[in-house]
Image (cartoon, rainbow, N blue to C red; front, top):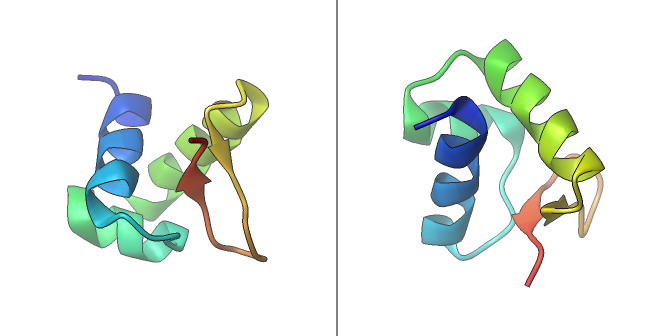
Length: 59
């Protein structure tokens, strides 16, 4: 499973917008890797940012 997939799965399971640090804790990934994955997922339109520094999957 790619880092992007792990990040997306963690967001879906949480059911609420998360910060990159919270995603890193949930997945056990490095925060820098999580932030890179968030940028990529956002560019691909798979996640959105409902409020500053919080991210959630696009429904």
